[in-house]
Image (cartoon, rainbow, N blue to C red; front, top):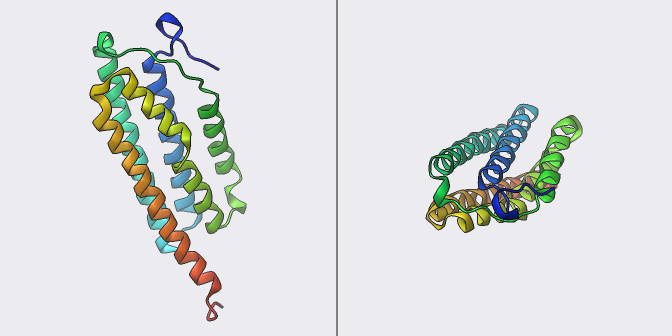
Length: 169
């Protein structure tokens, strides 16, 4: 589905709202994983931290939405197909529904996939395309996603080491 603004392009405010929805779904996912893996203090702590950071990202996007609404004339509409983003959001929703049967390892793998998703990158590129002055905010969100993926990879390595440990009960 394409969301159009003026001239057949996507309304930048709609694009930002879609990105905010993704950040909030990621917040929900990490909160769910935090509660699900309460018995693993390190994993639960990392998921709690990621949950808080995704909430913060949504707040930054709220700020961008307010800016775009107040200064509509300096934000250009952009062309973009929302289907991949909607698919990613749907995948996160499904992961939350079926999470009771997921292992810590699989939760980490899925989280890394979401963090590295091209959807978020492309949406953020659209924001810069709409208003180059937003580039710094967009870069900050992107670097946070990279840090999230790195943190999740470190956690994955720790879990793998424990799983392969000969002392494992």
